[in-house]
Image 1 (cartoon, rainbow over the protein chains, first blue to last red):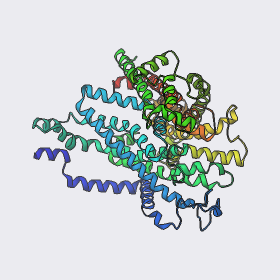
Image 2 (image 1 turned 135 degrees about the horizontal axis):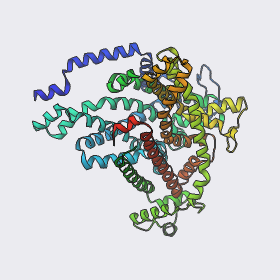
Image 3 (image 1 turned 90 degrees about the vertical axis):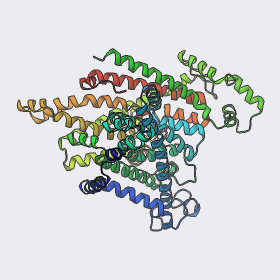
Length: 300
Length: 316
């Protein structure tokens, strides 16, 4: 029992301290990571408290005020139905972040489970699960998500489902790879010898070792999901008007490119900033958490 | 050379994957909430169809057979080049695909060219000035490129180059002038990925002993970089650009809608909204098969070209 906890967590106290230090030095040494962290924190704050700060409603139409250019009352102007664009962006942050988190969480759970089972079980189970992964990766992701969402019927919920079921394969691959590299280590053999049940070995010994690449992948994935959700909504398969979703807003502005340039550009900038934030943060986390990747980066 | 074992393994798995792809593609229409025949008829006529109409539709399109039999029929048809007929126009799906594919292929190739034109100089500059401000700027630029929704970039290009400068048409297809903006919109995101790759590959090459050897012969830095290092660095780069095929297809769907180009993407989206299932299945099948075959070819050629990978063994 003592050997088991000792090997799997390696003196918890010291790990915590050194992790904090490394986080601090990463944020100090790499302004890009800091920028990413700030963008993501800011967005989360906007999504949580933002609606309180704006005096307008995101869906109430005020046709007398339609297509007004940016002003003090409407910092980002109003849209074709007289709604405040800034307000709609703020409510949209809620939708985008919510969906990104939900989709990524489902992907992580499915992918990690499949990867753990495949890597640990080996044999025909591994072979079968990995072929399933191959099949999923054989489709261009957005095309498959688009078809699944379209056939289920256009709605934000179906976009979420579609993106979740087509995106877990990468996690399964990464986790399986890590499991394969860990499972032959001595402490895993030791745990097996003392009769630890497989479920417990997976949870106590394998999972902690595969979690870091998963965290990095998930952070980068949050950005991809924001892009994909906006793209599917833009096509008309996701959020339906009047929902203040960024992709839907952009699609609504396409007939006003000349007269009201802010209609496509405001949501465009919001999407870029969000995705950039996740990408910067993800790159920083990779330096911190995924030492193999880190050494590769230093090497080159 | 590639070992026969590996070749056999890779071909076998590709076949299994293609089988899975066909099952999944065929099964897609059964995701329809409710009865597919009824849903299609509601979509077509905008009213609740009579039971006779539903039965007639099922009979006409072979939807009464047990599902496994329908699948076998469908696959047998595919092998004879028959992927069904549109529910609307009764045109063969294969004919519609052949008609729409050139616009997409044209866009894909042009986007890849744009991506390489942007990525090679940026990646090389970044590598030469590694760690300096220019390098950080290039890398940040690449990151912004990856983060950019290409449909928004499309509209930005239209606003600037079509509406304000009047240099290119807003939409349409055919001539070169119709290809430039979509190719740039689609190629930029890919350029961002390829830039990182060029940078990494260049740094690896510049670290190698032969570079010092060439330098010590007194050749100018320019020749060292462009003639020797870049040439070697481009091998993995070109391969990975081939692997971006799926990325290009993903992007092409959206870009074709932005620029109203009549390609596979618009065909697919129109078919989805119209619930024209045979067309949806056909386009999905063709893109997935093309994707699987490209990946197979890229994987094999990569191993053939790069001895380091060949020695690395099979990583299934």
